[in-house]
Image (cartoon, rainbow, N blue to C red; front, side, top):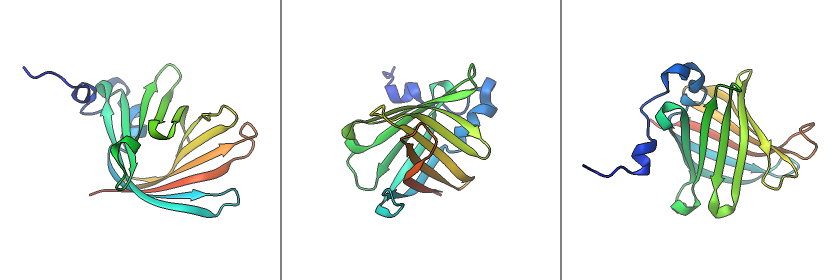
Length: 168
């Protein structure tokens, strides 16, 4: 008998049945995406553009989604990953993003707000708030917005935008 690996122990074939509808909030992204990233300065001008890929899949018996995000041609030690697990007690998602090579670690809470998926939490420096939103969602495209606030969420500054198109 073959020894299990962490990867096949994590993998799931679809959403956990009891919460399938709620789990489709992120389940709709399962698959592979081509991405174009724009970085912005404080005046709203694009300072950098990059291309990459983003992969989403079911994990933990279908109770969560994990993704892997990376720039094209970057070494694997520069990839980032997010764990997203639905919590029925608070009717929200716990989100953990990490990209160890750059010291990026974030914990957020996510909910559907209108036609958006909004994830919010404290930034790594604990001095400002992060808000990451999935917007303009269709079956084959979406935009992801990375914003920060230095005034406890009264105002938000766009820092990053990712335009995503599903790979065929």
